[in-house]
Picture (cartoon, rainbow, N blue to C red):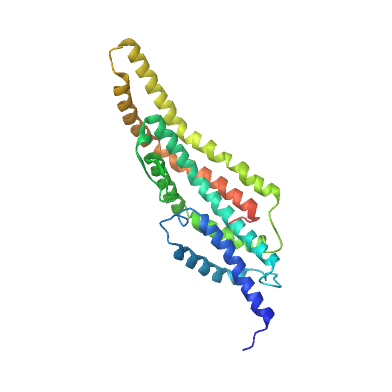
Length: 260
């Protein structure tokens, strides 16, 4: 079998450029981007998906595989994949922020552990919320929905024929405001409950000044914080579902797709 130079270049483009978009998403996506997941595993998964997706991808225009135009096109695909994966990371960071707020208000912020995703120390409550959100992400098939949207994007958002404009990048920045809004909404009930507890101890201090309010109040705040976290876990799934639906809508708008 004889292959011409043009056919070889076209085959390289059809595999390499989709691989870059896929690997960019896997490198920033929830769960798969964790440091506990070995890099060869992510690369192997990206190669497997690229091989499976290649027959569905329209022919990629490429004249010279080592030209500046090809390099820029590859960087564009990596940015697209990283952006989509980063949106899913923002969803989970919402609950990390909420956990940190609750931990600081209850005095549980002293208990910190290493976050395996970012490699930094975070309050144990924030890590607890992060683990719950990650499990819900996998339970809701969030990783499968993202892969489906990315596969559909190759037809709706072809390589070399479309690129994001300033408004689309601005939409991602504006959407990050939902991260803080949702975190505040999730932590609002614990904050109000602890405020009531602190007001009660303030009244007790006024009535009985001989009480050591710092010793007693700190212990009660921690115990009350644990009870409040337990009582508010029922709303955790609803908050996650709403935040994840907003993130999926943003991904659909950016990639011009709508998953079935």
